[in-house]
Length: 414
Image (cartoon, rainbow, N blue to C red; front, side, top):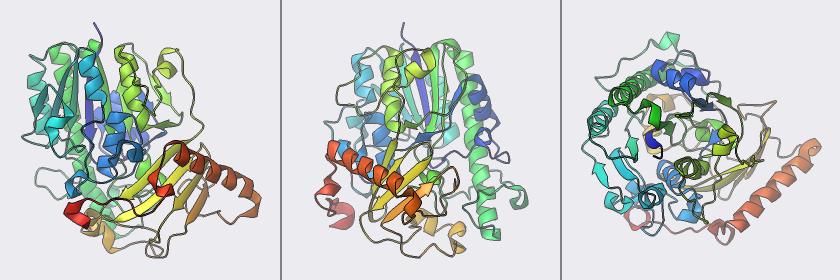
Protein backbone atom coordinates (compact mmCIF):
# COMPACT_ATOMS: atom_id res chain seq x y z
CA UNK A 1 0.00 0.00 0.00
CA UNK A 2 1.28 3.55 -0.72
CA UNK A 3 2.54 5.62 2.18
CA UNK A 4 0.08 7.74 4.14
CA UNK A 5 0.94 11.44 4.39
CA UNK A 6 0.29 13.89 7.24
CA UNK A 7 1.24 17.50 6.57
CA UNK A 8 1.23 20.04 9.39
CA UNK A 9 1.55 23.61 8.11
CA UNK A 10 1.69 26.64 10.36
CA UNK A 11 1.65 30.39 9.83
CA UNK A 12 4.58 32.81 9.87
CA UNK A 13 7.35 30.64 11.36
CA UNK A 14 10.22 31.03 8.92
CA UNK A 15 13.01 28.87 10.30
CA UNK A 16 12.44 29.85 13.92
CA UNK A 17 13.13 26.52 15.61
CA UNK A 18 16.00 25.54 17.89
CA UNK A 19 17.14 22.91 15.37
CA UNK A 20 17.66 25.73 12.85
CA UNK A 21 20.10 27.50 15.14
CA UNK A 22 18.28 29.70 17.68
CA UNK A 23 18.77 27.65 20.83
CA UNK A 24 16.54 29.88 22.96
CA UNK A 25 13.42 28.85 21.03
CA UNK A 26 11.24 26.23 22.82
CA UNK A 27 10.71 23.62 20.07
CA UNK A 28 11.71 20.27 21.61
CA UNK A 29 9.06 18.15 19.83
CA UNK A 30 9.74 19.56 16.39
CA UNK A 31 13.47 19.31 17.02
CA UNK A 32 12.93 15.60 17.80
CA UNK A 33 11.01 15.20 14.54
CA UNK A 34 14.01 16.72 12.75
CA UNK A 35 16.35 14.27 14.49
CA UNK A 36 14.14 11.36 13.42
CA UNK A 37 13.89 12.58 9.84
CA UNK A 38 15.39 15.12 7.46
CA UNK A 39 15.81 18.84 8.03
CA UNK A 40 16.16 21.01 4.94
CA UNK A 41 18.18 24.19 5.51
CA UNK A 42 17.80 25.95 2.16
CA UNK A 43 14.10 25.62 1.49
CA UNK A 44 12.56 28.83 0.18
CA UNK A 45 9.05 30.14 -0.39
CA UNK A 46 8.37 30.88 -4.05
CA UNK A 47 6.23 33.84 -2.95
CA UNK A 48 6.48 35.72 0.31
CA UNK A 49 2.81 36.47 1.24
CA UNK A 50 0.76 33.74 2.89
CA UNK A 51 -1.89 32.70 0.35
CA UNK A 52 0.47 32.89 -2.64
CA UNK A 53 3.07 30.77 -0.85
CA UNK A 54 0.47 28.14 0.05
CA UNK A 55 -0.80 28.17 -3.51
CA UNK A 56 2.75 27.45 -4.65
CA UNK A 57 3.00 24.54 -2.22
CA UNK A 58 -0.29 22.98 -3.29
CA UNK A 59 0.05 23.45 -7.08
CA UNK A 60 3.81 23.08 -7.54
CA UNK A 61 3.65 26.26 -9.63
CA UNK A 62 4.73 29.87 -9.19
CA UNK A 63 2.16 32.36 -7.95
CA UNK A 64 1.98 34.32 -11.21
CA UNK A 65 1.47 31.02 -13.04
CA UNK A 66 -1.30 29.58 -10.86
CA UNK A 67 -3.09 32.94 -10.46
CA UNK A 68 -2.98 33.30 -6.66
CA UNK A 69 -0.94 36.51 -6.36
CA UNK A 70 -2.50 38.01 -3.22
CA UNK A 71 -4.24 37.13 0.01
CA UNK A 72 -7.52 35.21 -0.15
CA UNK A 73 -8.93 37.31 2.69
CA UNK A 74 -8.34 40.42 0.56
CA UNK A 75 -10.09 39.09 -2.53
CA UNK A 76 -7.70 36.88 -4.48
CA UNK A 77 -8.39 33.22 -5.14
CA UNK A 78 -6.76 30.12 -6.53
CA UNK A 79 -8.82 29.42 -9.66
CA UNK A 80 -11.02 26.31 -9.38
CA UNK A 81 -9.42 24.99 -12.57
CA UNK A 82 -5.99 24.81 -10.95
CA UNK A 83 -5.13 21.22 -10.07
CA UNK A 84 -3.48 20.73 -6.71
CA UNK A 85 -1.80 18.01 -4.70
CA UNK A 86 -5.29 17.12 -3.44
CA UNK A 87 -6.62 16.48 -6.93
CA UNK A 88 -3.63 14.32 -7.84
CA UNK A 89 -3.89 12.24 -4.68
CA UNK A 90 -7.66 11.87 -5.07
CA UNK A 91 -7.03 10.41 -8.51
CA UNK A 92 -4.32 8.13 -7.09
CA UNK A 93 -6.83 6.58 -4.70
CA UNK A 94 -5.98 8.53 -1.57
CA UNK A 95 -8.51 9.65 1.00
CA UNK A 96 -7.81 13.38 1.36
CA UNK A 97 -8.66 15.53 4.35
CA UNK A 98 -8.15 19.13 5.44
CA UNK A 99 -8.31 19.79 9.16
CA UNK A 100 -8.10 23.37 10.39
CA UNK A 101 -6.74 26.24 8.33
CA UNK A 102 -6.53 26.54 4.57
CA UNK A 103 -5.65 29.82 2.85
CA UNK A 104 -5.80 29.05 -0.86
CA UNK A 105 -9.48 29.42 -1.78
CA UNK A 106 -12.41 31.50 -0.54
CA UNK A 107 -14.72 28.53 -1.05
CA UNK A 108 -12.86 25.71 0.65
CA UNK A 109 -15.14 23.17 -1.04
CA UNK A 110 -13.27 23.98 -4.27
CA UNK A 111 -10.17 22.39 -2.73
CA UNK A 112 -11.92 19.05 -3.33
CA UNK A 113 -10.85 17.26 -0.17
CA UNK A 114 -12.94 14.19 0.64
CA UNK A 115 -13.25 15.42 4.23
CA UNK A 116 -12.95 18.92 5.71
CA UNK A 117 -13.11 20.15 9.31
CA UNK A 118 -12.94 23.89 9.87
CA UNK A 119 -14.30 24.51 13.35
CA UNK A 120 -10.99 25.84 14.70
CA UNK A 121 -7.52 26.93 13.59
CA UNK A 122 -6.07 26.60 17.10
CA UNK A 123 -3.09 24.24 16.89
CA UNK A 124 -4.13 22.01 19.78
CA UNK A 125 -7.75 21.83 18.65
CA UNK A 126 -6.62 20.94 15.11
CA UNK A 127 -4.33 18.17 16.35
CA UNK A 128 -6.97 16.85 18.77
CA UNK A 129 -9.43 16.44 15.90
CA UNK A 130 -6.74 14.93 13.70
CA UNK A 131 -5.85 12.41 16.43
CA UNK A 132 -9.47 11.35 16.69
CA UNK A 133 -9.81 11.18 12.91
CA UNK A 134 -6.81 8.85 12.65
CA UNK A 135 -8.84 6.16 14.43
CA UNK A 136 -11.19 5.69 11.46
CA UNK A 137 -9.57 7.33 8.42
CA UNK A 138 -9.44 5.12 5.29
CA UNK A 139 -6.03 4.28 3.85
CA UNK A 140 -4.02 5.46 2.09
CA UNK A 141 -4.67 8.96 3.39
CA UNK A 142 -3.35 12.47 2.96
CA UNK A 143 -4.22 14.84 5.80
CA UNK A 144 -3.34 18.53 5.49
CA UNK A 145 -3.60 20.11 8.96
CA UNK A 146 -3.33 23.89 9.14
CA UNK A 147 -2.88 26.00 12.27
CA UNK A 148 -3.41 29.66 13.08
CA UNK A 149 -0.20 29.62 15.07
CA UNK A 150 2.21 31.35 15.02
CA UNK A 151 0.42 34.33 13.48
CA UNK A 152 0.13 37.61 15.36
CA UNK A 153 -1.13 38.53 17.83
CA UNK A 154 1.04 36.69 20.34
CA UNK A 155 -0.79 38.05 23.38
CA UNK A 156 -3.03 35.08 24.16
CA UNK A 157 -3.88 33.83 27.62
CA UNK A 158 -3.01 30.21 26.84
CA UNK A 159 0.56 31.01 25.72
CA UNK A 160 3.44 30.76 28.20
CA UNK A 161 5.88 33.57 27.42
CA UNK A 162 9.63 33.55 27.87
CA UNK A 163 11.66 36.14 29.75
CA UNK A 164 12.61 38.91 27.29
CA UNK A 165 16.10 38.99 28.75
CA UNK A 166 16.72 35.38 27.73
CA UNK A 167 15.70 35.44 24.07
CA UNK A 168 18.28 35.40 21.32
CA UNK A 169 17.60 38.05 18.69
CA UNK A 170 18.39 37.54 15.02
CA UNK A 171 20.85 40.17 13.77
CA UNK A 172 18.36 41.82 11.43
CA UNK A 173 16.31 43.11 14.39
CA UNK A 174 17.30 46.02 16.66
CA UNK A 175 17.94 45.04 20.27
CA UNK A 176 15.26 47.10 22.03
CA UNK A 177 12.89 46.37 24.93
CA UNK A 178 9.92 46.31 22.55
CA UNK A 179 11.53 43.81 20.18
CA UNK A 180 12.67 41.61 23.06
CA UNK A 181 9.18 41.58 24.55
CA UNK A 182 7.59 40.67 21.23
CA UNK A 183 10.15 37.92 20.65
CA UNK A 184 9.44 36.53 24.14
CA UNK A 185 5.74 36.42 23.25
CA UNK A 186 6.59 34.85 19.89
CA UNK A 187 8.38 32.10 21.78
CA UNK A 188 5.16 31.46 23.67
CA UNK A 189 3.30 30.93 20.40
CA UNK A 190 6.03 28.57 19.17
CA UNK A 191 5.89 26.61 22.44
CA UNK A 192 2.13 26.15 22.01
CA UNK A 193 2.58 25.02 18.40
CA UNK A 194 5.39 22.68 19.40
CA UNK A 195 3.26 21.05 22.10
CA UNK A 196 0.57 20.45 19.48
CA UNK A 197 3.16 18.91 17.17
CA UNK A 198 4.21 16.61 20.01
CA UNK A 199 0.59 15.52 20.45
CA UNK A 200 0.40 14.79 16.73
CA UNK A 201 3.45 12.53 16.88
CA UNK A 202 1.97 10.72 19.88
CA UNK A 203 -1.30 10.25 17.99
CA UNK A 204 0.50 8.69 15.04
CA UNK A 205 2.25 6.28 17.39
CA UNK A 206 -1.00 5.39 19.17
CA UNK A 207 -2.86 4.82 15.90
CA UNK A 208 -0.21 2.45 14.58
CA UNK A 209 0.66 4.79 11.70
CA UNK A 210 4.16 5.83 12.71
CA UNK A 211 5.87 3.41 10.36
CA UNK A 212 3.65 3.84 7.29
CA UNK A 213 3.24 7.63 7.23
CA UNK A 214 5.32 10.46 5.77
CA UNK A 215 5.19 13.36 8.22
CA UNK A 216 5.72 16.86 6.81
CA UNK A 217 6.12 19.97 8.93
CA UNK A 218 6.42 23.28 7.15
CA UNK A 219 5.28 26.89 7.08
CA UNK A 220 4.38 29.53 4.51
CA UNK A 221 6.98 32.30 4.96
CA UNK A 222 9.06 34.22 7.46
CA UNK A 223 8.25 35.34 10.97
CA UNK A 224 6.02 38.36 11.58
CA UNK A 225 8.79 40.84 12.35
CA UNK A 226 10.09 43.83 10.39
CA UNK A 227 12.50 42.81 7.60
CA UNK A 228 11.24 39.23 7.60
CA UNK A 229 7.59 38.54 6.68
CA UNK A 230 6.55 40.13 3.39
CA UNK A 231 10.14 40.67 2.16
CA UNK A 232 12.40 38.79 -0.23
CA UNK A 233 15.27 38.79 2.22
CA UNK A 234 16.11 35.32 3.52
CA UNK A 235 14.25 35.90 6.84
CA UNK A 236 11.13 36.45 4.71
CA UNK A 237 11.42 33.46 2.37
CA UNK A 238 13.60 30.86 4.14
CA UNK A 239 11.13 28.40 5.63
CA UNK A 240 11.12 25.32 7.81
CA UNK A 241 10.81 21.96 6.13
CA UNK A 242 11.17 18.85 8.27
CA UNK A 243 10.10 15.44 6.94
CA UNK A 244 10.06 11.98 8.49
CA UNK A 245 9.86 9.01 6.13
CA UNK A 246 8.99 5.35 6.68
CA UNK A 247 12.26 4.46 4.89
CA UNK A 248 14.12 6.09 7.76
CA UNK A 249 15.89 8.80 5.76
CA UNK A 250 17.78 11.00 8.22
CA UNK A 251 20.09 13.95 8.23
CA UNK A 252 20.44 17.55 7.19
CA UNK A 253 20.21 18.58 3.53
CA UNK A 254 21.65 21.88 2.35
CA UNK A 255 20.61 21.78 -1.31
CA UNK A 256 18.66 24.71 -2.75
CA UNK A 257 14.95 23.87 -2.78
CA UNK A 258 11.78 25.81 -3.55
CA UNK A 259 8.43 25.17 -1.94
CA UNK A 260 7.02 24.44 -5.41
CA UNK A 261 9.16 21.29 -5.15
CA UNK A 262 7.18 19.79 -2.26
CA UNK A 263 4.10 18.82 -4.28
CA UNK A 264 5.96 16.73 -6.91
CA UNK A 265 8.12 15.21 -4.16
CA UNK A 266 5.09 13.94 -2.28
CA UNK A 267 3.53 12.66 -5.49
CA UNK A 268 6.68 10.71 -6.36
CA UNK A 269 6.84 9.30 -2.83
CA UNK A 270 3.19 8.25 -3.19
CA UNK A 271 3.81 6.62 -6.56
CA UNK A 272 1.41 9.05 -8.23
CA UNK A 273 1.92 10.77 -11.60
CA UNK A 274 3.29 14.33 -11.59
CA UNK A 275 1.32 16.66 -13.91
CA UNK A 276 3.31 17.94 -16.87
CA UNK A 277 2.60 21.60 -16.08
CA UNK A 278 4.12 21.42 -12.58
CA UNK A 279 7.05 23.83 -12.39
CA UNK A 280 8.62 22.35 -9.27
CA UNK A 281 10.95 19.38 -9.33
CA UNK A 282 10.79 16.37 -7.03
CA UNK A 283 13.64 15.97 -4.55
CA UNK A 284 12.58 12.48 -3.47
CA UNK A 285 15.51 11.03 -5.41
CA UNK A 286 17.87 13.20 -3.36
CA UNK A 287 16.88 11.10 -0.34
CA UNK A 288 16.22 7.70 -1.91
CA UNK A 289 19.20 7.59 -4.25
CA UNK A 290 17.01 7.89 -7.32
CA UNK A 291 17.00 10.49 -10.08
CA UNK A 292 17.49 14.06 -8.90
CA UNK A 293 18.58 17.24 -10.68
CA UNK A 294 20.03 19.82 -8.28
CA UNK A 295 18.87 23.40 -8.50
CA UNK A 296 21.40 26.09 -9.34
CA UNK A 297 18.96 28.83 -8.37
CA UNK A 298 15.62 29.44 -6.68
CA UNK A 299 13.17 32.20 -7.55
CA UNK A 300 10.66 34.06 -5.44
CA UNK A 301 8.19 36.87 -5.95
CA UNK A 302 5.90 39.33 -4.27
CA UNK A 303 2.90 41.03 -5.84
CA UNK A 304 0.29 42.00 -3.26
CA UNK A 305 0.33 41.71 0.50
CA UNK A 306 -1.54 44.58 2.11
CA UNK A 307 -0.49 46.77 -0.78
CA UNK A 308 0.85 46.43 -4.30
CA UNK A 309 4.60 45.77 -4.13
CA UNK A 310 5.79 43.85 -7.19
CA UNK A 311 9.32 42.49 -6.87
CA UNK A 312 11.21 39.41 -8.00
CA UNK A 313 14.23 37.52 -6.69
CA UNK A 314 16.78 34.95 -7.81
CA UNK A 315 19.14 33.25 -5.36
CA UNK A 316 22.09 30.92 -5.77
CA UNK A 317 23.95 29.29 -2.91
CA UNK A 318 26.10 32.41 -2.58
CA UNK A 319 24.41 35.37 -4.27
CA UNK A 320 21.00 37.00 -4.37
CA UNK A 321 19.55 39.52 -6.81
CA UNK A 322 16.26 41.38 -6.14
CA UNK A 323 14.47 43.57 -8.66
CA UNK A 324 11.73 45.96 -7.53
CA UNK A 325 9.26 47.31 -10.08
CA UNK A 326 7.75 50.19 -8.10
CA UNK A 327 9.02 52.66 -5.52
CA UNK A 328 8.77 51.40 -1.96
CA UNK A 329 10.43 51.82 1.42
CA UNK A 330 13.20 49.43 2.42
CA UNK A 331 11.10 47.60 4.99
CA UNK A 332 7.40 47.57 4.04
CA UNK A 333 5.23 46.39 6.92
CA UNK A 334 2.05 44.33 6.63
CA UNK A 335 -0.83 45.57 8.78
CA UNK A 336 -0.36 42.92 11.45
CA UNK A 337 3.28 43.92 12.00
CA UNK A 338 2.35 47.61 12.01
CA UNK A 339 0.11 46.85 14.98
CA UNK A 340 2.79 44.90 16.84
CA UNK A 341 5.10 46.42 19.43
CA UNK A 342 8.13 45.25 17.41
CA UNK A 343 7.33 47.95 14.85
CA UNK A 344 7.60 50.73 17.45
CA UNK A 345 11.40 50.79 17.20
CA UNK A 346 12.38 50.16 13.60
CA UNK A 347 15.86 50.13 12.15
CA UNK A 348 17.10 53.59 11.04
CA UNK A 349 16.94 52.57 7.37
CA UNK A 350 13.38 51.19 7.52
CA UNK A 351 11.69 54.07 5.70
CA UNK A 352 14.46 54.96 3.30
CA UNK A 353 13.72 54.43 -0.41
CA UNK A 354 14.30 50.86 -1.51
CA UNK A 355 16.71 50.48 -4.43
CA UNK A 356 15.25 49.13 -7.64
CA UNK A 357 18.14 46.64 -7.76
CA UNK A 358 19.66 44.79 -4.81
CA UNK A 359 22.54 42.36 -4.97
CA UNK A 360 24.04 40.52 -2.02
CA UNK A 361 26.99 38.24 -1.39
CA UNK A 362 25.38 35.88 1.10
CA UNK A 363 28.65 34.24 2.04
CA UNK A 364 30.21 37.50 3.19
CA UNK A 365 26.92 39.15 4.18
CA UNK A 366 24.36 36.52 5.27
CA UNK A 367 21.92 39.10 6.67
CA UNK A 368 21.83 41.10 3.41
CA UNK A 369 22.97 44.43 4.79
CA UNK A 370 25.42 45.53 2.08
CA UNK A 371 23.85 46.12 -1.33
CA UNK A 372 26.53 45.45 -3.98
CA UNK A 373 24.42 46.37 -7.01
CA UNK A 374 26.90 49.10 -7.93
CA UNK A 375 30.05 47.10 -7.13
CA UNK A 376 32.17 46.92 -10.33
CA UNK A 377 34.11 43.86 -9.15
CA UNK A 378 30.92 41.78 -9.08
CA UNK A 379 29.16 43.32 -12.07
CA UNK A 380 29.44 40.12 -14.11
CA UNK A 381 27.80 38.05 -11.36
CA UNK A 382 25.04 40.63 -10.88
CA UNK A 383 24.36 40.80 -14.62
CA UNK A 384 24.23 37.01 -14.88
CA UNK A 385 21.63 36.83 -12.11
CA UNK A 386 19.64 39.68 -13.64
CA UNK A 387 19.62 37.76 -16.94
CA UNK A 388 18.54 34.54 -15.20
CA UNK A 389 15.73 36.39 -13.49
CA UNK A 390 14.47 37.91 -16.72
CA UNK A 391 14.73 34.55 -18.53
CA UNK A 392 12.66 32.92 -15.78
CA UNK A 393 10.05 35.66 -16.00
CA UNK A 394 9.84 35.19 -19.78
CA UNK A 395 9.69 31.39 -19.57
CA UNK A 396 6.88 31.50 -17.01
CA UNK A 397 4.94 34.31 -18.78
CA UNK A 398 5.24 36.65 -15.82
CA UNK A 399 2.64 39.42 -16.41
CA UNK A 400 4.86 42.00 -14.73
CA UNK A 401 7.00 42.05 -17.90
CA UNK A 402 4.11 43.58 -19.83
CA UNK A 403 2.74 45.90 -17.17
CA UNK A 404 3.20 46.66 -13.50
CA UNK A 405 -0.56 47.31 -13.35
CA UNK A 406 -1.57 43.82 -12.30
CA UNK A 407 -5.28 43.11 -11.76
CA UNK A 408 -6.66 43.87 -8.33
CA UNK A 409 -9.54 42.15 -6.53
CA UNK A 410 -12.71 44.22 -6.09
CA UNK A 411 -12.96 43.73 -2.31
CA UNK A 412 -9.88 45.76 -1.52
CA UNK A 413 -8.64 47.81 -4.44
CA UNK A 414 -11.52 48.66 -6.78
